[in-house]
Image 1: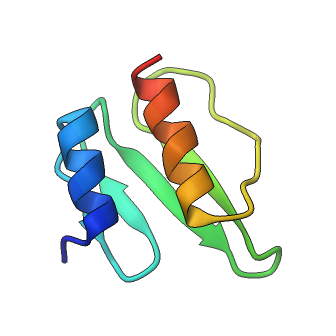
Image 2: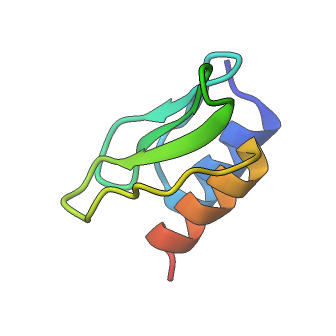
Image 3: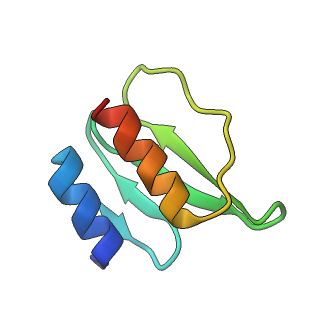
Length: 74
């Protein structure tokens, strides 16, 4: 499924993002995972490349997407 968020990430990162309804995922060096921890009700990001993984939590999905995009395209 491609959502508006996945489409934006496709354009910005060049990766092929899919939206599972909550989690966004993409393979490849510019891909990763953007998902929500249901216990904490906060969002996190994981990068597929060798960069340091963020240990930051985000209040909204939009905040997590913005942080991912900023990290990929500083």
